Every structure is written in C-alpha cells, then in structure tokens.
Image (cartoon, rainbow, N blue to C red; front, side, top):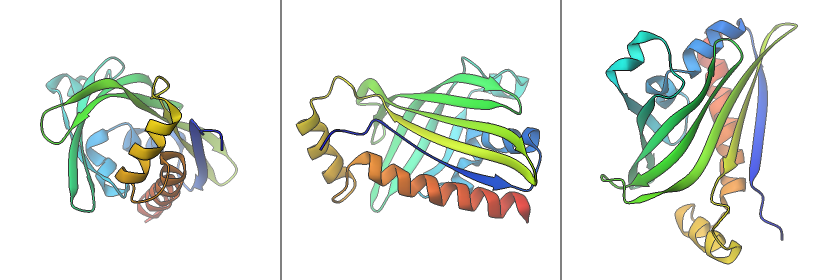
Length: 166
C-alpha cells in the first residue's frame, strides 16, 4: 500500500472566519480541542500580533507518552490561513531535529458560518516507507500516521465547533 502523506478534514462552525482564526492561531489554546496537544509555550514576541516566522514549543500526550515539539509558524493570514511546521521533537529535550509534519488551518466564509479545514502533511519524505510504517505503528499502537491523524482531525474539529458555538 502506498504511503499517504496528507490528510484533512473540514467542518462548518457558526462563527466568522476572523474569530475562528483568532482561536486556532493561538497554539496555547489548541489543547482545548486536540486529543493529543496539551497547549504550547509561546515566545514573548507572540503578544505583538505578528505570528509568521515565530516559533513555539508544543506539549503533547498520547497515553503515557509525553513529548515536546518545536514548531515554526509558516503562515498567519488573519481570517484565512494559519500553518506551522514541526521541526523537532523529543521527550523533554528536542532529540530529533528533522522535518516531521506540517499543520495547516484554512478559514472560508460559507452560508451558516465558517468552513474550517485542518490538514496534516507528513514531512518525513526522506524516511524509507518500511521504517516510517514501523515507527508509526509503534507510536500509534498499530496504525500509520495518516489514519491516526485523520481520526485526530475529526475529533479536533468537532471539539472546536462545540467550543466556538457554545
């Protein structure tokens, strides 16, 4: 089976694109919606408003596993798009420094609110497929990351909708 490098999902939320963007573009809030992410440590410059080019440390948990990621914001277009690239991860220290994944959120005004699309792209292109598959199955308890992330995206978007429409 061919390796899948990108998965995404969308949901319509009864809010405007700017409000949805403001929530999602603050990685410190992501822990409210994501099944794995527990928030982020943001650089002081984050408060200045300009986000493209900034980094943050994401804090994650899956079962008993905990890890930190180093992320670089690659797009921050208010009300339209927010994206970041995961460049390193490790249990406490960033042990593996290499392209890991890119996360992107798009916001589109539609009847009834905003279509939010979340996309995960596997940036581990240099990893041989057999190695990636073994790593994925160990890290996710039996699945490849594309399947695992598709499930996480559905849960994240449903939780985001529930929060923003409350």
